[in-house]
Length: 104
Image (cartoon, rainbow, N blue to C red; front, side, top):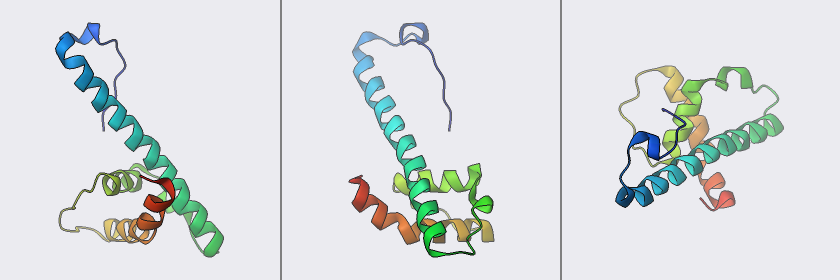
């Protein structure tokens, strides 16, 4: 995930491509906002229902990346680690509910 801040003129976009650029920026922004909202949804639900939930092990970029990927309908490669398996299992437990509540 990469972000940068500059004006459209400074990066040399031609006028005919600006509408598409703004559309891509809107999609990236909405997905990023939903990534953090969905993470909060997961954490709040887990903390309310599971007194043994250890939020600390999920507060990292690896988990947030998996959350982001779940929102863009990423089909995922083969699972390579127990951490990825654990992350995806937690995300999948709440994905349908979040999508319904957030109208995403």
